Image (cartoon, rainbow, N blue to C red; front, top):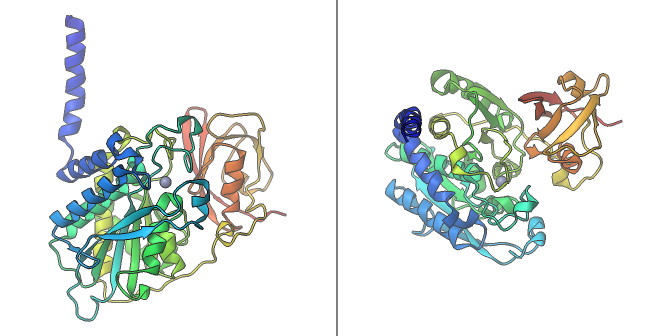
Length: 419
Ligand SMILES: [Zn+2]
């Protein structure tokens, strides 16, 4: 029928140019994301053939970039999931074998090449859901993890492709970590068994975890407070070539692999395009990835890694106490001052108001707002909200995502002390 054909043609005209305007880098990262987050990869759960295939795909990409294997002629660093890893107690994965994928771009400067810049991204995800997933109704469905973290893995490969033919002063190590979703297991294994000895030779670690959903140019560079030089360095690179709405802040703790390096007192950066409603759900699919934004983040992170690998001076590490959750401290965590509505609100915690003078009031929260994320944690219910606040201390600055009517609103709060 004519009308339908016309509509169909119009739709093609509307969609086709968008595809054609993707840059070559955006095409490459999109191809990587689509491979890594295809249903055939089985959600890249530990112990699956899908995760093994993803590891081989990453090793092949490193080989094609003519990078060198880091471990005795192999790109793979195998490790066993320890039975006493806290997250493993909820699974049947104790004793399972998995592996990091590690490649080297050797440094050229005789005085600096023993120092290493690590560029890392985890490539495992939640498999069929269940443990770690936020959608218990979808257990058994493949959780593709396109943003978490096929996006960061694709960025890692793109950074390797962009830097491969250049000779940095320091050595650059590219690492795809496994076991992140079970508690940063691959990165903590690497920190204990660094293929470069000692771990102190790591000059800085750059982590890419969830970088596929750039919105309004907003890019977070968490960990920016872990070296005195980071904020200035990031600002000048962003002004020159990034052009993001860049938010560089925070210590080096956080729920991803950079925390393993920060615990070993190395400066870290975590690039992140922030949480969204598909986080840790079976709907985190490649169709929702912003390939152009992902390529921009990868190119910017490549520039950051390149700058770090070549600047002559040392970095000034800035330590921070571990958050309460890491030290096993219980307590009630930091204070926000919201008054939650105890009735059920789907996909978040609805508040009826805020306490006078509270951090929530200062951040501009209002009655009727539905809080959906605090810091790096999705807030689906009051338990999540308590957990999120427990993982922070008074004085921490946290990003809060909320729904206000039809709008998604981002605010920042400085948490207080519970009295
Ligand atoms: Zn995750």
